[in-house]
Image 1 (spheres, one colour):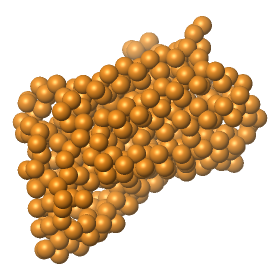
Image 2 (image 1 turned 120 degrees about the horizontal axis):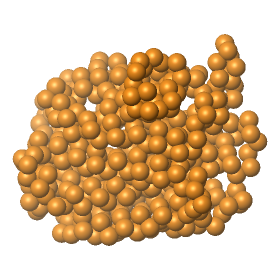
Image 3 (image 1 turned 90 degrees about the vertical axis):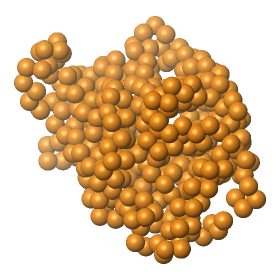
Image 4 (image 1 turned 45 degrees about the vertical axis):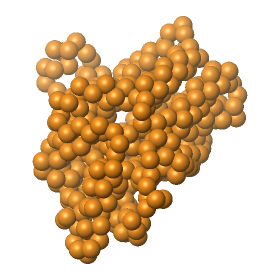
Length: 447
C-alpha cells in the first residue's frame, strides 16, 4: 500500500486538527497561570483552586459519550465546530467570574458567589468541550489504517506539548504585560485573549474539515478508494475479536482495563500540568516575574513533545505496545519520586518535572492505538468516548488531590509520593489491558 495518499491526508487535515487541539488544551489549563494572580485577588485557597480546576472533568465525563455519538450522527465538521465555538465563549467568560449573576444558585449550594462561579464555569467548560478529543481519535480512524494509529495520534497529541510551549510564556507575558491595562488585571486579559483562537478555529473547521474520505473534494477517486480500502483492510486483517455493538463494547473487560490505565496516567498528567506554574513560581522566581515562570514551565513540555513523537514512531515501527506503555509509566514514577527530594533545588525540580512530563504524555500514542484493534462502528465511537470520559475523571482527581495535600500536613512531597504509587498501579493495569495484543502484526505491504 502506498504511503503517498496518507501523506496527502496528513498535510490536509492534521494542521487544522493540531491547531484546534493546541487552543483546546490552552483554554483547558490556562487557569494554572491565571491562578498566580486570580487566587490572590479573589481569595481562592489551594483547595478551592484544585477542586475548581478539576471539576472541568466532571462535566466532561457526563457529556463525553453522548457527544461522541452525536459526532457520528451529525458529522465531524459540524459537531467539532460546535464544540470549539461554545468552549471558546465559556473560556472567555472566566474574565468575569466574580461578577456573573447566578441568582440564588450560590446560596442553594452554600457557597460564596465567587467560589460557586469558578466551579460553575469550569463545569460548563467541561460540558462544552466533551467529545472533542475522543471525536478526533475516532475521526482519525476514518482516514488511517491501524499500523499508522500510534504515530498519527501522537502527532495530533503533541499539540499538548506545543500548547504549553507556546502558552506558558504567552500566559506569563499576558499576566505581566497587561496587568492594569484598561483597569483590568492580567488574568482577565489572559482569559479573553486566549479564548478568541478557539472561536476562530471553530469557524475554520466548519468551513474546511470534511466529514471523512468520501467528502474530501481534494482527493481523486483513486486516492479516495485507496484510503477506504486501506482502512477496511486493516480492520479485516486484525487478529483480535471485533466488537460492533455498544453493549458488547461496554461489557468488554479490555475496554475497562484500558480505561483504568489511562485513568492513572491522566491523574499524574493533570496534577502536574495544572500545578506546574505554581511549582515553578515557588522555586524562587520573583513574585511578579510571570514571564520567567512561563519560560521555565515551557522546558518540560519541549522535551515531552519530542519524547511523545519518538515513542509513538518506535512503537509503530516495532509493532510493540506493552513495553512502550510500561516504560512511559516508569519514567513518570521515577520523576515523581525524584521531585519529592528536590525541594529548594530549581535545577533538580525542572529535571524531575521534565521526566514526569515525558512519561505522562508519551504513553498516549501507544495506548490510543489499542481500541481500534477490537472496536468497530458505533462501538468504537462509544468505546473511545467511554475510555476518555472515565479516565478524564483523573483530571479532577489529580489537581484536587495535589491542592488538598498541599494544604495538609502531607504537603507536596506526600502528594508526589501518592501520585507515584498511582503510577505503579497503572503499570498493573497496562499488563491486564495488553494481554494478547501487546503487539500487532504488520503485513509486508504495511512496512
